[in-house]
Image 1: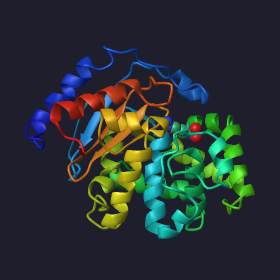
Image 2: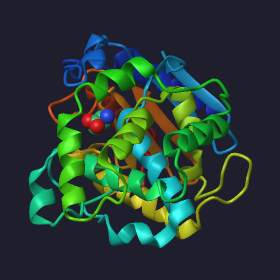
Image 3: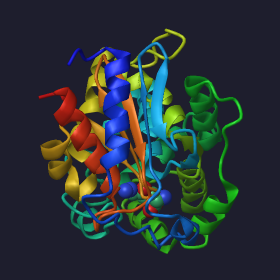
Amino acid sequence: MPMNDTAALYGTLRRIAETVGRAEPAGRVAHYIPVLAEADPARFGMALAFPDGETIGVGEWRHRFSIQSISKVFALVLALAHRGEHLWTRVGREPSGNPFNSLVQLEYEQGIPRNPFINAGALAVTDELLDHTDQPCELMRDFLREESGAPDLDFDQRVADSEAAHIDRNAALGHLMADYGNLRHPVPQVLHHYVRQCAVEMSCEEVARAGGVVTRHGLRADGSRLLSRGDAKRVNAIMLTCGAYDAAGEFAFRVGLPGKSGVSGGIMAVVPGRYTLCVWSPGLDRRGNSVAGMDALDRFTTETGCSVF
Ligand code: DON
């Protein structure tokens, strides 16, 4: 199949939307953030954005959901753009092999999170961004508005409040890192910005557009350079090796693309230089990745033959 043939790609998305979710159980919605538990696990949307911003999509591709951990990609992009190499003194780039909110590794590795996509790593990234601006979550929201062309997108305050009321585990990660000297700002301040960045509400179409900065090797939607090609390559590499937590191997095995999942059921995936995908379906597997989302991306790369391998 010609990979940039829009009509053919749309046909693929249509076939995926018709079949996905029927072959497997839809999974369970996240319960540890109570507002997310209200979602219907069977909902489904999928979008594809070309580097020029053109989009196609199927199902509920214009329905907004809180992007949760997908925000960790954008936080990393902004931290590399504004703080550069310094970030790597305080966060690693190895897969953790552990759940995204695990505490154990953080203690025996002296407060240095394995990578920027587990929760501890994302807290370190937020802390790093706080050295650039006292409003990192607003910086991200404004960036996402510009990249996705959606000036009205914003935080879902209900989701942020719900997570803030159940913050003990992330607070524990933050305090442990602070004890090791790997958080410079007060833990509550870091948590506040982290929770709000996770609560940014976007549709599959908007996420796919915003992810274009990674797909275009560091160029923003307006053509200006935000990241060097080298840093964009690194972001893609970390998405490939760490984007699905303790299922990163399974994600590479089935999908074969740099990707990033979130507990609200979204997954962003990148075909470098070609297009950005985003799929959403709230039913999760036991590692916190969307069941139908993984299935849809697996089918997409299998049918199109378009993965990084
Ligand atoms: O901190 C949390 O637990 C959530 N705000 C985000 C976690 C998440 O999305 C993990 N993804 N699979």
